[in-house]
Image (cartoon, rainbow, N blue to C red; front, side, top):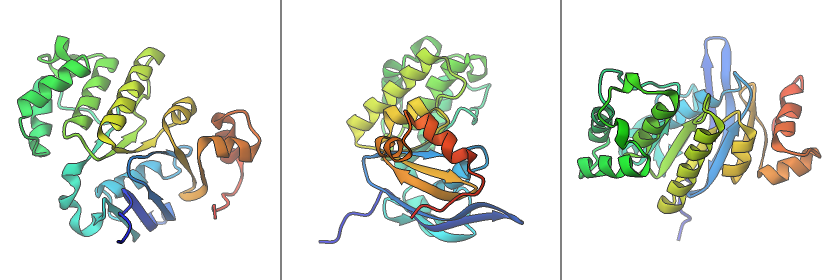
Length: 250
């Protein structure tokens, strides 16, 4: 019996924008049911990598598959089993929260959609503002709605780009707890790009570190802290970020 395909499998994945190389032939495979952190400073290639995994950015070379499906040629076979969340992507302001979730639920082909929206409203505490325009919400409320949108189709693969950016500590902790609960209940695979090292240490089984579009290290948070002889992952991040030239991990 052949082994099950990785949830996400990137093979020599590269993206160039003119003379700029955003992602430089990176390869990694992510096991189903795991939580992996994608770390790096601004411009390291994290968001571009996520865009290629989603099939929104066409690789210059290399390939990426999700749940065994090649994203360059057949992504529509698997998009309904994935989802994405970022505080930098706004929902239509004039639509109510309920209307926004209904639109996204229809796009994902969610069955019993009204019941699913009601379920999310209860579990994510959206009920007080479910029928208010999305543009009138606070930052914390918008984050809850973005999380509801990301979970509307109960995705097998969830991609997160700075999911708790600009949130106060209490709201950020609330979001992390909901993500942990969803992963346990669904057995979902999560890829998390974040600058919050405490968040990564709490949520992630593994960390892939990028610099200038290359993988410069890969391991569990505990292993990385031990390897660099540091007290925590934030100190490891600073060590990697302050090296003048990236050294590809092998």
